[in-house]
Image 1 (cartoon, rainbow over the protein chains, first blue to last red):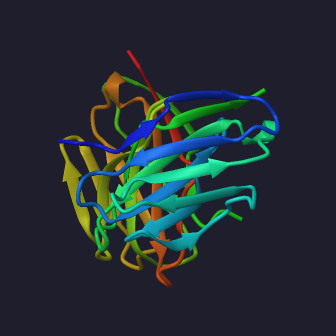
Image 2 (cartoon, rainbow over the protein chains, first blue to last red; image 1 turned 90 degrees about the horizontal axis):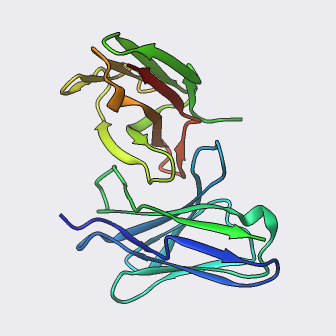
Length: 112
Length: 111
């Protein structure tokens, strides 16, 4: 069965650069979530979209923005990168009303 | 302050042993999920519990949701080395607000 696809898997950037992470949800899933997970930490919710509209906002910095497109894929845009942004970024998708979320393999961002 | 607490934080056992990990909160949850995560990979959904007192079994794993829907437990029977990983509970509180994860229990099953 198709899973959540994230790209790229690994990304290396320098301070103050920008980065764009992409997420392709499971077909027919209408909700997308973004999480940030630092080393040894649990995933921290950043933002979610339902039917291409932002539905919930968590601890997403103002330097980050995200959107969901007409084909339901989502992009997380990160600007003015800081060393502390180095982390694993996960995307998850679900069907509204289905409480479980299905996660992608993540993008490992390293800011040097 | 963590909305969801998990215990123990770390657990190291021998293959074949049984274990239970706990997920607790002072808040009521409409549902709780359990995930297992391996290093560098995304969390994998194991189960969703919805009804207070509900018990679900997944092969050697037994999940229970507390009667008051504030806590949950995961019991593994005859642990195998392949059970090694980070076990996370997660859920949306009864107000339908943010989806939160617990800090996780890191399980090591030794051969």
